[in-house]
Image (cartoon, each protein chain N blue to C red):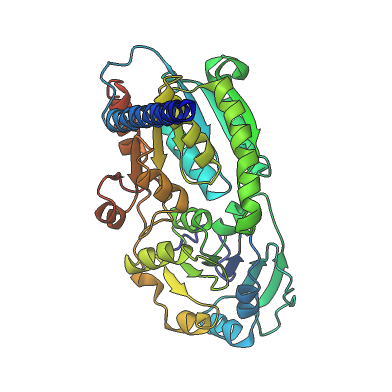
Length: 233
Length: 177
């Protein structure tokens, strides 16, 4: 008799556990879908103050394109600016510092008040084997989490390098959890004419970028949710 | 195309650049006799090779009835070399391509077939289709030089980041500039 009661009780409690888990999963899914839906639409409020901005830099051409974009953005709206580059990328932060220094000398504001520069561990070096990349991506993700908790930007600008993936994923999770709403803008590189880069493809397929911009009409045809903006360079 | 004001007209420099990459196939092709011959036939006098991280070292030459050949590995900015060139032969990196096109220099882009996932060829092909540059492989470079008509190239109108900026501003609720 006792065995019978014991069995009944444990199966009831396991059904209860399963039901709770299912409810939680469904709630999370609904929240995620809601976040995705809201992300795709322009912010409803008129912007009244500057937005903290995270700018993710990548090697070579990526940085050149990003600086090109920054040149036409009004700096008093995108303020403070946090620049992140891969730990092994020596040139990008320097170039960003040069831009910020020239801005600071023009306006008389101290660079340290409006811009910060940080390095992040890279998920994967060019040519690195995909197997070791799993481990390095994990480390990069933890580092990215640390940086994102510190910065919690309202706007994220990125244009291609793999460094942006962990940061954008964390930003998305922050949105879902209600920690911080970041508007993620991804500009696919001008060098991508017929196919998206891996970063672009991930952000597109996972609906993680609020706006994904492409520079060639062929890409817009292939990826209808992308926005064609012509060439930046 | 080709701005040669202020440059000694008897000096026509072909500048070859591989950027920060290693692209021995291009450096070898450019240093080969049939390419150098084609360049001479077209009236070029100097060949300057920026060889980057490559291991193949070209042979310097003083001229004397042939091209003057010189090389270096890196420089902090190739802008001056681009400016004084009459023809640029470049790897397919977007930075090199657009820097050259902005200076309105005739450009032959050589795609590195050894690279995995060669998306770079997409950009070179598209710009070649739009007649802003010529596209070649290391093997076909001498043929491209022989066949090229630089006057048929169309100048590239530099792009503009303002549309993206406007999109971003509107999305965030900032007023248009």
